[in-house]
Length: 117
Length: 241
Image (cartoon, rainbow over all chains, first blue to last red; front, side, top):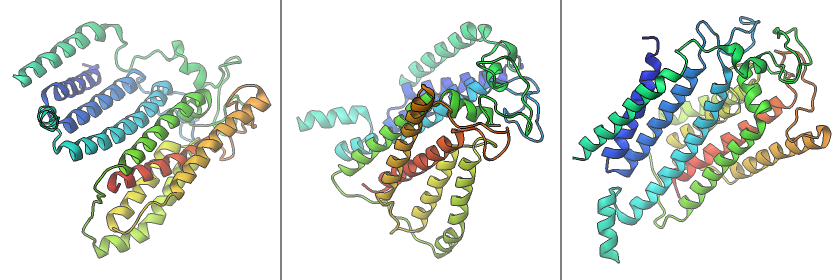
């Protein structure tokens, strides 16, 4: 039962995959990708947890090291920033698609393209 | 039909993770710190013998920042962070270019409200101050360049919500360029002085002091400016093209 946080991240991963496969709206697929991003971040941070460990910062309250693993946290910091970049670039691309075809559904976009061509 | 397929795919994936992957990872909370790389990083002795770090006492270690995550991000993995801000830079440039070629000039207008506008005028300097505090104290307390810059960008977003005339000027782009170039210049200074790109060439001082950590606070301040300017211009580009 102590591994419940791993199950939380796996279930979030499953929700994200379900969203990507089941949804037709491209924006919902982008949001599902973002959910997968969050799930992986939770999983990586959970891997570094030590029972009874404190946040890895030397301070007046924690002068001597009894810390959780700081390396996964540093990696997740990178992953979060790259997730923000992906989300911003993806949404502006979707705005472009919506302005050109008037829809975010791949099937409708295909129909519109056939009419245009 | 699509939903059934989706449930099937997600279920197979979940089964694979739980049955194949869960047994080989350590139980939650049982990570053995003595076997991990981070143990050397926490004791700040990746190149020398193990030593105990004490707050406000240890001095002249190989990395002087009290926040261990910061010491990884801005010192041990500083080259990786340079790549990370480059990715963010590319994303911001891409958003800017794609927003500027949108054919019908669009702009999202909000209903202006007097209470929001006046209270934003009061609270915006405080948000700016808090963002600057977060990235100046990045090596001592939780936070750093990325959260501080995001806080500043959110202050700019608040200005946009309250005032339809507000616009992020091209000055933001210049701040971003100067900060990004400054990061590379610090790396080249490390190359010139110590022979390694992005080397920590300043004295690291006493753990826990504001002036400690060598180049780490400088790098994080530059990242703070860069991320703040970048995210402000991304928000502004998404609002009007």
